[in-house]
Image 1: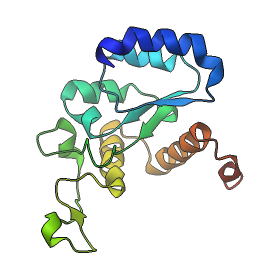
Image 2 (image 1 turned 60 degrees about the vertical axis):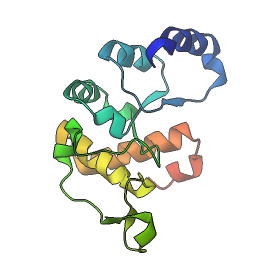
Image 3 (image 1 turned 120 degrees about the horizontal axis):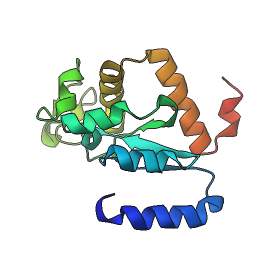
Image 4 (image 1 turned 45 degrees about the vertical axis):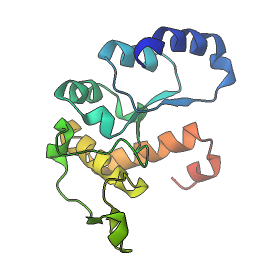
Length: 156
């Protein structure tokens, strides 16, 4: 949130009653900022490739409670590239081809496709070490809470 952090907290504090919940998208800030965000009851923290860029970022992500974590891609941006600290945890990759040579069984090289949220999930699972099933259920619940998909809550 960089320089907008203080303004964001003030606006959220004044208007919290207007929002059923929210996601702080593409979080790359400090543990202190994370704690301030978590003080808002239904605020989730969005994690994508940018959030997994440095070892410092990984340490901050480690402190996000799984029940408040929202994995995202920010397609077509913010992918995990091989210079990111989180890339060491990505064990399998989908085939990709330049857009001129695109084939249906591959992704477009250099574009972060929505299906690549799998990479973020893999890094979080490997780095944070929590059980895959718990993570997936928690993520699903997070999405249903934030996006008010009450009919899906009946499935669980």
